[in-house]
Length: 382
Image 1: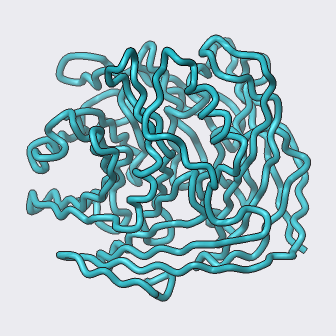
Image 2: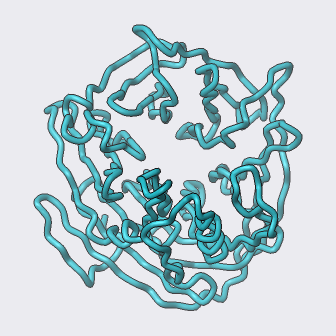
């Protein structure tokens, strides 16, 4: 299903791209009510140091797996009964080893996909290896080397032998899609012609003139409603890879509250020893940052938070300005990405942490006195 009509068409080897920019005013008012729920961990301590960024949500939203990278265990959180169900221990090395600091996602059959550099394997929820996907062999050019990294790796919900990866080339900070067929041990590379503007905002960090890493725009992938979606925090748009047509389409918005893009364009390089990176980070944060899209299956709509941060002059342990508060905005889209409502949410005064939609509401993770909690946001649109 094509979600937008194209004004720009670029033919690729096996894909096409189109884009549509919408400039509009959304006057509908959004009303929210907040409730906080606590997770009962019993006598256990839950791993919250990574703020749930190493976690995955089951397809039916009944549970969440939070990965503890310090001891290689997965904490299974029952979201219906608000309690820790169990901890699943995984091995670091050996036949059932998952290695160091893997990414993970829950597959539709409840097995877990773990991946990192040159490692792409499926395990069950007893810690046993189920299948080695061998993507480092099938896609050796990109996934068998350290110059590239799969930001996300998704199994096609309608075809378990097909995987879609959003891949980054570190040196050039460019991104592209890999469409991988396990059955035929083949793949296609799909270019993202409208994504290059994100690469242009990449900041190379130097230390005494030597390359010491970089700072770029965030990339937010999501599989929903038959598409592989991805967006960035610098542009008010979404790019969509259609699983059926192998095409990429782009939809953009320019709204009174959020505009279309960050106005500030950072320098190409920053010398770390000059202390200038903290000022660049602050300028980027003070402008609008577009958040990740969240699919609300119950109401067939998408949510997206965006925010503008406020800072004090105080520096934290990482030599960055301390964030004091934020203006938080919520955008609501229908299943075809038509914007239906957008407003500032005064009840939220900090950038939302990891969040997802469940039962028509938005669940936002909160660390309350070192205990796992969620702020449940009930959303109504007049």
